[in-house]
Length: 325
Figure (spheres, rainbow, N blue to C red):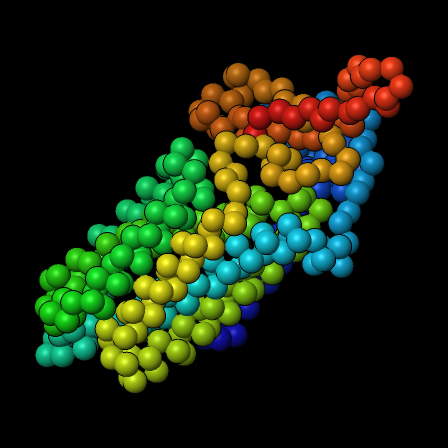
């Protein structure tokens, strides 16, 4: 059974090897604007077209510069820290859910506890995830993370504060289920979306990878630590610590910018400003295909800084041009 898990993993590795780099990385970092526009047209089946006049000069932020940059470290603290704290609370509580339900309702049968668990996911978690997909761009990615962490903290702290809530199954499931809804309608969506938006293009995968790795470390800590906390401090003590983790996640979210409805280029100071040209899209090709999503495919393909007239004796300044995301 363990070996069979390598089959889909091998398939993913093969398919990834056949994928091109993202158009932004190809154009901005590798300096291959023509290849970026060709890939964009090919892999969008001709729906999105981009024209280029000159390839931009590729620039890459080194790993040492990345780790020495105060701004990048703050972004790592916000993305990786929030991901760690969320995964600790979420995976620790989720994988310990049978033990939690056993303590709340010690005489319930195994089948009954399985049905309660299934109900938590179907009634609370799944709708929360779907609603997040549909509304996160309108609400805002950082704001959605604020909402999720805030309700999670409130739910865990209320359960920890009132003893009778952990001895009555219906109130407990209602409040714990509410936390599950806002887990999905919140940080379970945003903790992996925000790192893919807030870092500069040359180090976007590096920043995202570091954040993801630290996040999974939080899941590892939660899975092994939560049962020990429940054993030594009881269910309420364990929920109190989970609530504190959610409060810290809420606080750390403050250091992150809001990327919703902004171009990726506007999320950081680009040392070599690039022009974003809006894609040319055929209405007939778009109909029924992207459903208002055509603006999500800008491509940086020109490096044409404009000069602004300045008083005599002063050097001209360059003004970067940017299009919508």
